[in-house]
Length: 61
Image 1 (spheres, rainbow, N blue to C red):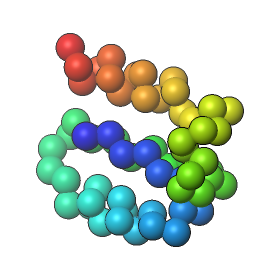
Image 2: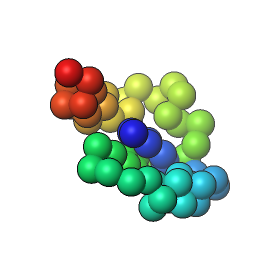
Image 3: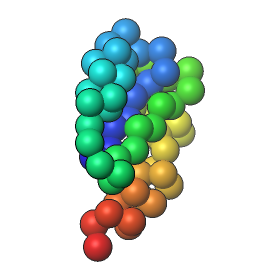
């Protein structure tokens, strides 16, 4: 499971809670510094594409 959330998003606590309850070692939580919720829809300059690709390459074999 991969979660990505903006550090300053008003609803980040939902992802914090969900991630803390996930089992297993095939999980990652990407927190994008200074980003709010909507930034991860269209701010391609801050979306962590490399980290997302690395996660998929590791776990979608």
